[in-house]
Length: 342
Image (cartoon, rainbow, N blue to C red; front, side):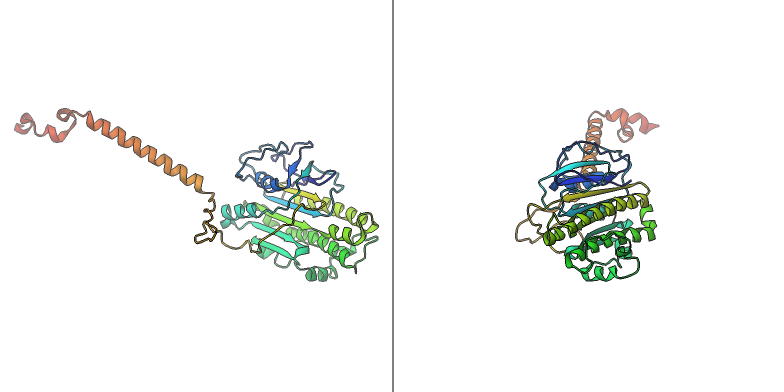
């Protein structure tokens, strides 16, 4: 099932969620820096620190969603998303990424080639992993590609009520381009339905800043901004329903709305396709080794094997120490005179 979230003020809205991912209704605030941990827990992964947030309860051990879709909308603190599972206030809206969750998916399901897609059209930033490389290779990424896509068949311009928006204005075009990307993602998933039927979880992370640009260009009290807000709310509501249906009710989709982040996000430009490094020898900063998720398994295997071997040595030594050579050992028994005469 899919999951989406929304509230007054910066918010996290859960639009769709499977029954085994239990979100509790309430006004419990969640910090922006905890969003990646929340996403990891909904997918059944462990996190380094416990998430002490009552909004998410422990789910079933042997069931996990087949996909998680997180949409971050910048430039608005809330959207009218009436059909949702739950909404929570977002406090401390610091920038965050799902890189840690993507690396977990990559390390645990590398052989199953899951879909990992992280996209920010306004920054022309795209990270793809696994089957996403083949399925989304034709997805328009740069603003020039997306604008070209708007003039082709199947463009959202033919179905959207633009009202006061101008398809030739720069800020308006950025917003419409992001709407087009949402439409193309669901279209590609409908074309490749086998992605939703495998056993490896898929991860999608989208960052939309078109509303933020419209607010700067026209002001947040302008008719253009109000029209765009209404359009995006309707598009996201349908987007969540489509994703939920494509994954057969086994997808989590979250919508984070934030007026503005408290600090600029400094992100190292890299590809998620890079092989994961377990350690960083020769680092000038003398960094510690990166945590390996197999560490706990290997540690328990070695620990209990050592305990079993130690107990075996103690038992054998005890029996040898208390052995009666005349009765318990055939070697000593053969030295007996009577046996030797026989």
